[in-house]
Image (cartoon, rainbow, N blue to C red):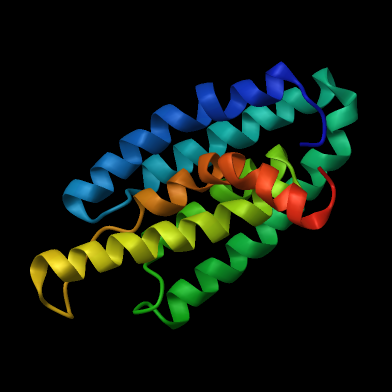
Length: 167
């Protein structure tokens, strides 16, 4: 993490988690991530981090970098969703900016560990769905997996730090 700040740690728990959990539940039941809900999550996290930057000046460079990374990867995900909807649904593509913003704000190790853990979890869930349904074309809601990435990344960050020699 860039700096151990209780205020920074409050953002994923207080601002990100409640709407992300609601979005994950909704996607699991309806296979949809409503634009308004995703926009609310993105706006809430963006606003919380924008308010946090002046309060904790040592976080400003990391939060600025997180915003730039989130915009770049988010634009790429939305473009991929538009060009190849069979590879990435638009609902999942729209969640990428806020997921990357939250992960990157928590630190580089979280940003690296989160997608790795998310891909592993999505693969396991896909295997379970294939095994349970015995159909290769079975579909399941993937949205809860990327929404969990900042938390999965927080769990895996110490392993990434050890692997990079930054622990």
